[in-house]
Structure formats: structure tokens, C-alpha cells
Length: 263
Image 1 (cartoon, rainbow, N blue to C red):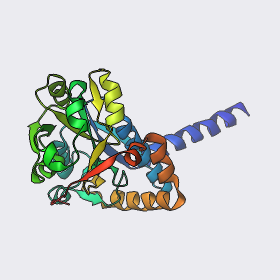
Image 2: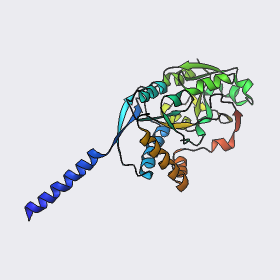
Image 3: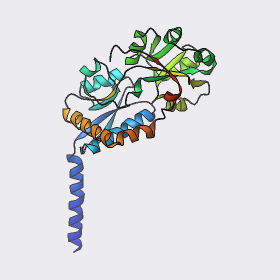
Image 4: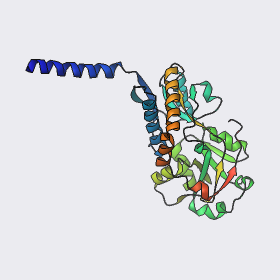
């Protein structure tokens, strides 16, 4: 009897191991920097969407350089299967864009991170022409950099993420526009009382943030689209969004609209 029991246990363990090995593995890019609420939301959304699509896979993370364009190039060369990014026509040529707006358009709602010493100057701004007197910092390979510049705003392109906060602190740049889904957790992480978010207004332009999938893995793109659609229809997507992000500021401040010629 004992031999039979051991044999059954061996079969179960072997079967589980084989099942795990037989599942497809997807390689998800993971930037080498601290993770914020925005990132944690996307990792959870990815998992929930795959479950909703009944697409059982192993997920492995591949460390990549924290530059969006380099990661998308890694996607195009087959080094990773999936990452996420704000979209642009050029980026959609590098990989398959799963055209579900991951932040429901909130990625284009940009609050201004400034040095507290400059708040008196910034709070009186009511139109874009006034903001154009000041200098913003943005990532050198971010689509936002071109969007802001195309609207007549002065922008310094910077390669290093932390350096952008440091430049605002050192008063070498006037403001750092961040999405409403990014700013609060990033500011908490900086833990510097000299930094603040301008509460009176925000920039707004059409923008979409998508999952991007390696062109050699169209099945993954299809399954993700199916899972995300199911989540929206069931309300699970909205529930996840409001669990991660506090967007009350948008209803208590006024909007400065920008155009996005790359949308």
C-alpha cells in the first residue's frame, strides 16, 4: 500500500512539474529602477488580463535599461516579449501595440512638480503662454518631450530620471511634468519637503499608454487584448484603477489643454 501511495505522489509531482514546464514563458521587461504605483498597477493588470483570457503562462522578468526607446528596440529584436510605453507612430512600428489605453487616458494628465520656493510664481499661471517663460525637464526619449515642445514650451531633454528631480531641487530647471498616475508616489519616494505638486492646474493632452508585444508573439497580443476587454466589461479594470490612483485633484483644479500632433 505504501509503495502505491508513493507511486501516486510521484505521478502527481511529475505531472505538476511537466505542466509547469509545458506552459509557454513570456519574458517581461523590467526597468532597473525603483518601482512605483504606476509599475505595480501594470504588473497586476498584466496578470489579471492573462487570467481573464485564460492564457496560462510562466512570467519571467528581464532587466532592461530604464530608457523607453532602448526597451522597445529590445522588443523589436526579440530579446523580450512584452513591455509598456506611451505610444507614438514610430513606436508602433517596432512592436505590436495592444490598443487598450492602460491608464484610461490619465497618462496625458500632467501635474507640475516644482521647488516650493517657486510656488508663488507658478500658482498665478492661467494660460500656456505664461508657462512658456519657464523651463521643463523631460526624458530625452519620451514622446512627451516632443509634445511639450510642439506646444511652445521650453524643455530640457535629460537622460537620467533622478537627475530631473535633482535639477528642479537645484533650481536648474523650473518644473517636471508628471502624469497624475505617477506624481504622488514618485514624490513620496523622493521624500524631500522642498518638492511639491502645483495644485491649481494641470496640463492635458491626448495620450495613450499601451502594452507592446514582440512581433514574433502575436498570440500574446491577441490574448492580452481579449483579457483586457473582459476586464473592462466586468468592471474589474476600473476597480483596479481606482484602487491604485487618487485622481481627485483633476476635479478641483483647472486644465491647460495642449495638442498632441503625434497622437
